[in-house]
Length: 323
Image (cartoon, rainbow, N blue to C red; front, side, top):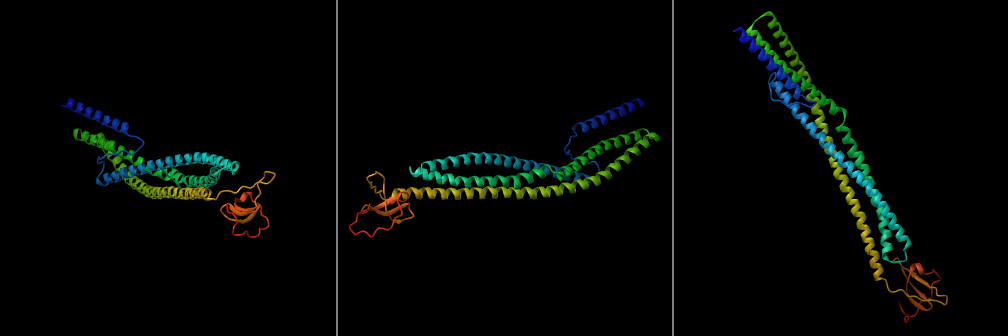
């Protein structure tokens, strides 16, 4: 009989050691979820609360990192657009300046080149906003001290709970020993194991409450800040596109207007003197770019750039030709 008892006791010791090894093996740097009731129902509820908060703050942190990553990409692409847009603006303005007397394309190129400067300014403002109001605040919180400290408290509680699980196994083993052989040594070891269990229980109550409070505060701040930054991102993108659309609408309207004025203008009257140079006498300047005038007794419309502001010619008779 004694032999069987010794073998049973030895087997229980091996099982307990294996349980401890498994617990130690699966213990990681994160919070370990478990539905095992180590102490009582209150402790189990605290453990489940911490498990939920830990997962929530981790999910919030990961989402913040995704927003930061997106803002970084947006800013990088924005700087590339600014570089390309600035180059395009310079080329358009250059073409317009070199071909000002050529055709309507030169005028359109100048208009678009000037407008692109405003477009790139809007892109630069958007980039600054992405960095200051989206990227920096979210990056600071996702890697900040409050979050890390709160999660470390939860991890400490998780490790303490695992230790309590191991200690509970040890208490049960010592109780079995006492039932088998109620010696002074076995009783003393049981009392020591139970005392350690009570100590762990008290420490868990304090640490669990502290960890839950810290994680709850971080979760609340995390949710509030992330929501605010997300709204700011949407508003920034909306305002950017509205302003760009306004600029481009004005550019398009101006281009179309220039083309219509060009097509609607009357034929140019060309009169040459003996030197072969065109001479126009200005009678009246109009804002359309064409001026009504008279030259060598011929009346008509002339490009304003080619006329000279001379003394006004007496009014022509009703039979004067108009070109």
